[in-house]
Image (cartoon, rainbow, N blue to C red):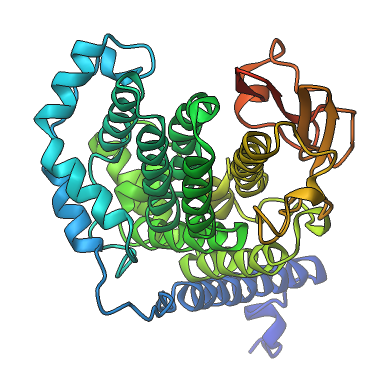
Length: 431
């Protein structure tokens, strides 16, 4: 009988080669790594999408008699203006058109002016937005022109200052950009009435202007207002996929594919991290905004595409100082006008105005130094050095370059904010 040799285990289960073992080891390592990466990614997304921190509004000590609610009710009764009407240029519109519009809302304008003389503080950021402010500003400017045409320059100036006061309320409580831009309507009207004021009227309206000036927000107040608005917008966008797509400026958001895409992007985006990045950036901006204008540094936009989208286009910080400089130059013009009516000539320097006419001489917000003033006979030159901080001997901003130079010069623009006054000639403000 033939003997069968014993079979070894290698014959039935051959061992894999070294190359095969390495291949299987690599596959197992990749699988483990993929599982770890997936778990880590899901953990990061879950951590990043934790609940958003609460948005805290600043606590305000409201005065006992706060006229904000009554102001909203009064503005709601103002008649709306059509898109195309001569009243939108009240200093150029025909007088019959102005008279008809003012008579239609005279009672509400009287109540509005009474409220503007008291304390007005908005109770909450999301409550009681001011309606029809632009219509009210145009009507106040129109009323001031009618009073000037009737020979009452003092009343016309006071009415124009009420338009400035309403702009201050809008700038502090609703939107500082509208408030600063709308100030020009009342300011320019008041400047044209200045040569016709008596000495007593000049002193009266000058004190009224001194009361209005502190009502305008500083840059730190503007930053706080913008911070609350932006964070509120961010919270809405991070809880609504459609708004999220709008912030990112994505197209086809209203189609089924667009809605599905927006939901997918919002589910993958680290919401809490993006929100906290925006908060950190605003904390730095607020710290910088507390500095005086010459020492402020520019802050680049926040990192991350979502915070960048929300803040792409933040206005520059020259707006409050430009507004303050324009109104303080108007106050100095009133003081110079009063001085000339009482003494028969303009003073040799601005120091002669204090303390008889001005308790304290205002200083240029761009440098902290006194405003520049020169007298040459019956003509004087009064100016601020402007955002670039350089004294260019009263050379005004170039008006022919761009409309931006007229309304909003920046640190990059050469020129001064100049007021020229000649006897019996209305003052002109060159921007």
